[in-house]
Image (cartoon, rainbow, N blue to C red):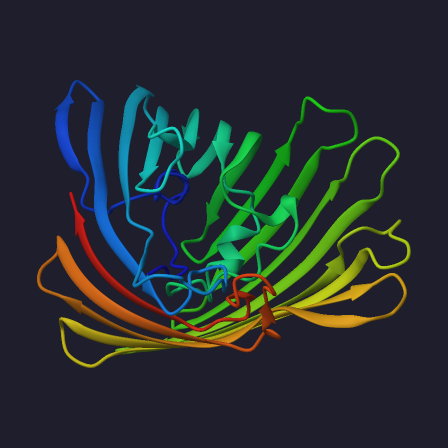
Length: 334
């Protein structure tokens, strides 16, 4: 589960993976951490893409491994580097996929980093990306996480405001992207976020843009969040090609006891074609239950009621989209 919280710029830039990363070396201003997770994820009825499972279960298990280093250069100035890889059980090459790989400098709460990392808008989309099937707000390339070739600035001001700016420099012509985001956290539990993102779609093609806003409120064991975005998928789209979109997500979490918590999420993205036809690209309600045995191990169950129109393959008789999903998971963080 994820939730947007305020932290130092360096920590915000290095939150990928488990927060339980072990410090294996710390001396003379240099610190090195190792962490990750092993997670079983079994999907019943349908998979996370809404495709009906032909057999008993679709295995979506994965493992992650991350390395984080930080060293002091001068007082108030330090260097850092982050790597995280992931291997999925159904990976065709059985190798690690690079999730994050970047390095940079931190100037007393203002960080400049280079490499594969999140675009700035993610600090706002994370306000409702809290469960197994949430995260609809990463619509265009300029607003997504884990992007290659990103230059990022992340800063914290007055212990209550985060400002992030990212630019993605692509090797292909007219494919660059950008994102600018701010997140304010009031002392009484209210978070307010706003992000602007955009990217070109390639030489001779159109461009995409997204405006994203978010509100979140935390009170004791309760968290309520909402995000809304709108923009262009391709401002030069014609005919039945997708041109515009709107997306919104509502999230609710409550910690019933120290180990037991619940989450309820509604997620929706509506696309509009250039000819004016509208349809739901994503639509559904999720209910999830999490039980943490300790800081390292948790188990969970999640049911996603899919509201997207169901499509049936004429040959197999199985749904190719719109199927509900029941997920059971067991996760160990190290």
